[in-house]
Amino acid sequence: DTAVSQTPKYLVTQMGNDKSIKCEQNLGHDTMYWYKQDSKKFLKIMFSYNNKELIINETVPNRFSPKSPDKAHLNLHINSLELGDSAVYFCASSQRGLADTDTQYFGPGTRLTVL
Amino acid sequence: SQKIEQNSEALNIQEGKTATLTCNYTNYSPAYLQWYRQDPGRGPVFLLLIRENEKEKRKERLKVTFDTTLKQSLFHITASQPADSATYLCALSTGTASKLTFGTGTRLQVTL
Image (cartoon, rainbow over all chains, first blue to last red; front, side, top):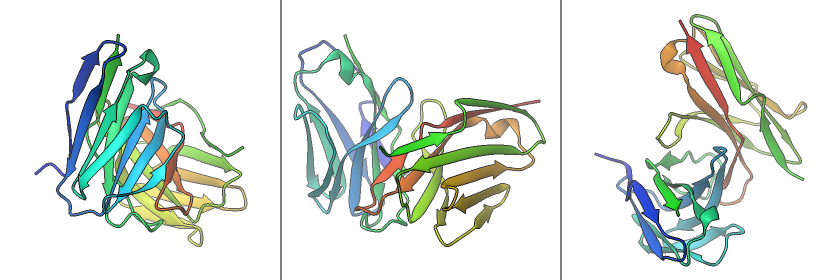
């Protein structure tokens, strides 16, 4: 029943490690997104894929690499984790992703803590 | 530089009153503006969308206005209830591939 799901919900890891977060949507949407929400609750877009094609790539360190094996999945891989990467990461999807009227459906978030 | 600011970090009101939240923006020309609700530990949930040529939009106890001259949107919750307590985020669509830029959010607390 879950529309947009993410795993894991919590991720605690050491600095320098590599980790992945997975996202799946069962809404049949064409576009998926990754957002980062920092400790001040500011939500900022990182990436967006439309039908497996990267369409938004904000100023994000290249240690972050999204991968979309199909339009229902968008994973986020992070290399060489740093303390500043600690945040909540949200996956979202929208129907077409090419129109301003598209509303976005968010997953429950993954809280990443880097020690 | 571009900015989206929401009036205050936190807003406390009494049950039954109308809550009014403000979203101001600078150096944007958004065609659409959206409001989302976020509960602790959860992702944002879409509430309302308003287009630049619409002055007002309503949905049950919610009302949104959009003034492109003032570069401001107001979000009202009438007859507020404790269950309305949450963080409310405004988001501008900047016209590029459905990219949403979010405001800083206002945490609303409705007390009995």
